[in-house]
Length: 162
Ligand SMILES: [Zn+2]
Image (cartoon, rainbow, N blue to C red; front, side, top):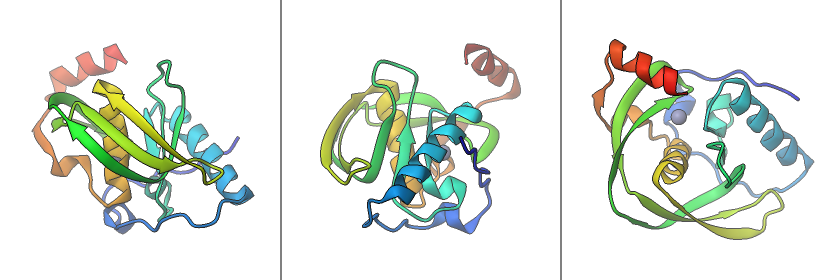
């Protein structure tokens, strides 16, 4: 297991469009495994490659529910619907939480670690986590979508819920 260092804001790589993955090799598998270990180590529900300094369209999401770990390579949003307001944080912004409005439902096309295409549908918090990570791959940070930051006393409640 290899835990990689998290790139925190401000950093140029966090605001860049990432390159699509074209080679599906052992190096990619190792990177995905490291991204998973890093996400777990830092208690994240998702991690995008630029957050560990890699300019590639790769993300992992795991909100600790029955969906398990979702690996998204070159993901593309096919469809969204509804609207949902929820609290988000980001490993690249330690201690910062804010309310973000996003579609409630998302349908995404992506490739798996072997380069095989698949489609995933998600709702609610999983949809939120997936959209947050896909945004990272296009250099979009959640802070650009926050309508209200949480105050210190509200943060304590969020942390207790974790
Ligand atoms: Zn993030």
